[in-house]
Amino acid sequence: MVVSEDLKDFVPFAPVMETVVVFPTAIEEAAALAVMVWAAFLIVNVATLAVLYVGATQVDAGIIERGALIALLNYMAQILVELIKLANLIITMTKSVACGDRIANLLKEKKEDSAEENTLTEKENRFE
Image 1 (tube, one colour):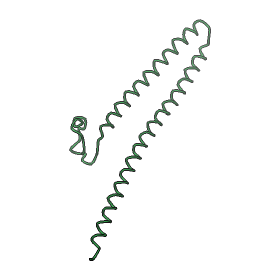
Image 2 (image 1 turned 90 degrees about the vertical axis):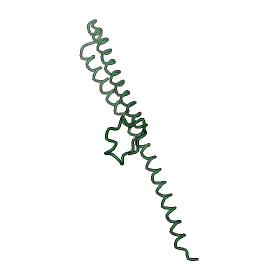
Image 3 (image 1 turned 180 degrees about the horizontal axis):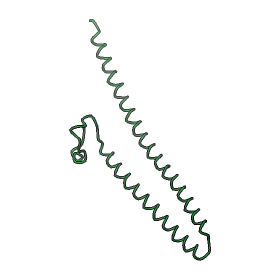
């Protein structure tokens, strides 16, 4: 397993997983994603509480009806679900571009290796 020295504490099964490569950016990405998901849910819950508070005062004052407040909460929830789907799509696309780059680099290395093997066999097959 190829793990940098500062990450050895984060990989408990390092002796067992000899073929896995852990990149430092993957751990940083996972930590950033965890913080962003936590912050997004905090914002959603605070926004829901704010809508409920303002809506409750308006229902109490007779400005809007209870059904309108419930409809507003439902619409807000539907919009937020779609925004979460969009965020997941962006994350997936970013990861797929990075994986595509890695695959392209791997294929490029394979071509270079096979080109070196071909030149070696051509030199060996020549009779002088």
